[in-house]
Structure formats: structure tokens, C-alpha cells
Amino acid sequence: MSVFGKLFGAGGGKAGKGGPTPQEAIQRLRDTEEMLSKKQEFLEKKIEQELTAAKKHGTKNKRAALQALKRKKRYEKQLAQIDGTLSTIEFQREALENANTNTEVLKNMGYAAKAMKAAHDNMDIDKVDELMQDIADQQELAEEISTAISKPVGFGEEFDEDELMAELEELEQEELDKNLLEISGPETVPLPNVPSIALPSKPTKKKEEEDDDMKELETWAGSFN
Image (cartoon, rainbow, N blue to C red; front, side, top):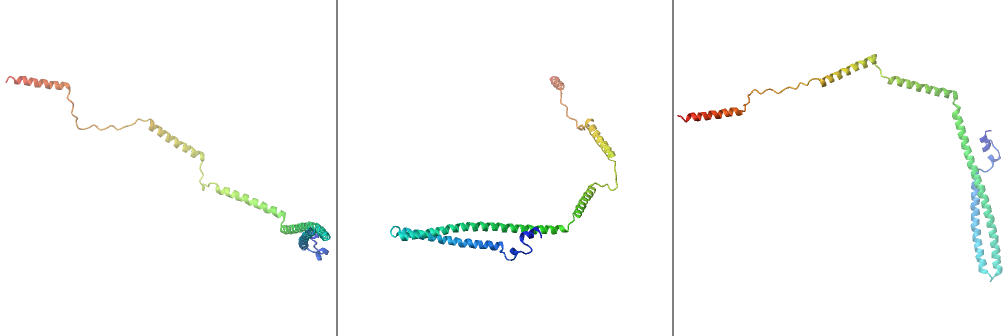
């Protein structure tokens, strides 16, 4: 018999056949607590009534007052007994509820253990290791394929990288030499065209003096006519 069967009485026994279930026992204890609580309320009212009667009779009717106080004492004694009984029943009920809770927890744990065992029955650790190794191999293969696909492909054309770099350097040097020649060479700036129309020359001072002398000579010669 399994440990859970021993705990829960599987396979028969007096407790399994005729004993009350924990839920039934807990319910009965609650019913008893309710009955005793009502009894407490009744006794408390009776105590109050007897105390009122004792005060009412007082010194006028000592015998009646004493009888009321005696009944009051009996009711108080019963009330104290009920208080103790309620404390015991409450403690027993709480212990039974805790035991019932533990029983349910252990049952559920037992069911879970059986379910886990059933789930593992169809599993072989060697097969699991093989499966995980296959998965790792497939992942490695997938990475290799991805790496191969991502590499640039020349489709059969292969070039010497050093030769290409040398040719590129020659082209850069030619461009640099060309730029240097353009910067250091003579600048050929076109000159403006010479105008075809002659510009009037400005008379000089000497020419003006000669003209004045000729006018004076002509005036003097005309004076003889």
C-alpha cells in the first residue's frame, strides 16, 4: 500500500466504513457551538432577572432575595461551565479543520505525484538526450547555412584585390596631378577688342598758341588794305 493509501485509509478499515467524515464532525461541532451560545444568552438573561428580583425584595423580603441570589449563583456556575465547554469545542473544531485541510493538501499532492509519474512513464532519459542533441545539431547546421547564404557570391568572377587597389591608386594620382597643373599653369585671360572708330584728339596748348598768332597776323595784314 502506498503512503497516501495509508494516510487516507485506502483499502478499508473501521474509520473508512462507519466513521464520520471530517466535514460531518466539523458541522456537528459548529451546531453544538451554536446551541451552547443560545444557552449562554438564556442564562445571562436569567442572571439579570434574578439580580433584579434580589434588588427588588432587598430587606423587605430577605428570604425571597436570598433565593433569587442562590438561583443567580447556579446560573453563573452553569454559564462558566458553558464558557469552558465552548472553548474546548472551538479548539477541537479548529484542530479538526486544520487536519482536514492537511488531508486535502496531501490528497492533491498525491494526485499531482501520480500525474507526474504518468507523464514520465512514456519518457526515456536516453531518448531525451538524443532529442536534445539532434536539436543542437540542427541549430548548428542552420547557423552554418545562414552564414553561407550571407556571404557575397561573385558568380564565377574572381578578381585580384591588390590589382584593383593599385589601379584605383593610379587613377587617384592622375586626378591629383591634373588638379595641380590647373592650379599652377598661366592664366589666359582674353583682352578686349580695339575700337575701330578713331577718337578725337584733344588739342594741345602749343597748337592753341599757334592759332592765336595766326589770327593776330591776319588782323595786322588787313589793316593795310
